[in-house]
Length: 377
Image: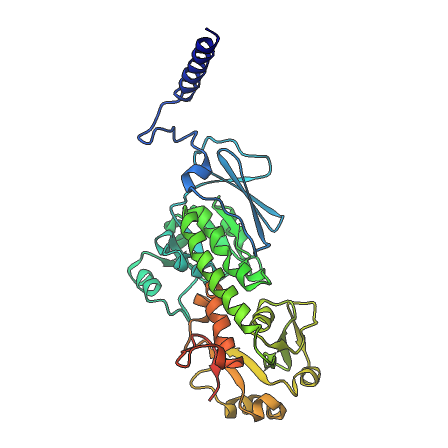
């Protein structure tokens, strides 16, 4: 009898539990849309491992995203969902947005999500044929540069949010008056190459592509770390300097810059490796003292035509004094010919391989073709 009583009690509890779950009107999937947990819709969580500029916290029906500790967004599936005080509500997935930088655009390209991009600042120096086609046929509008936006085009694009870069000249106050939510995208501030690439997860939360973002990033991370481990096995570590003279000063990549980290991960030592900044402007004499005997010299610029050692010397005769110049070991990328900022933010693994191929060619396949950087001929 006691055993039968226990069984009856168990059945009663089970029936009660089932009855509790059926109190909401079901959808085709069997769960009310308004009450469906946000994480159940996305099926995956977002956990930044390298990026330090944003954090994510999930509750039953709200995803709270904090950017740089200053900006707070609550991503919800239903307009009537209550959000914490101090958070800006954003209904996701959004239908459309505007990108202000190539770095932001690279995130959408990596996620195969250009359909969400309704506007960009312009197409100067852009290579992506899909983007160029979209601006030509009107699927994307060109809103103008920071500080001189075309408000009619912005309103016509009807974006739910606009991704902005606070470091730019701005002009965002005018846009604020429209009520469009401005979302800071701070990938450019990341000091870890993988951290910069991880901002594609940030974008993914707004467009419902969290699963794709995690998968894409996992591949980037694996390839990067495998190559990094390989490069650390090299028998010697060459030294490398970076930048060039502009308007009387040399803008040097600081020791904390993501590029300095790539140098280290590629098995080389940066000449100002102990510097605590991400970048600074130096006089030639100071930079020469650091760079005179560096094995390699990395340069990124937009040169009209084919850059050469002659052009480098013509721009600053003292450049010829550097060992890397004399031994023809200048590492070069011309942004007039290469879509550097369109691709490199989400391709740190490829960027790393370019440098490994130069510093330690024995570690990569003999027929490797660089994507961004190669030795200047």
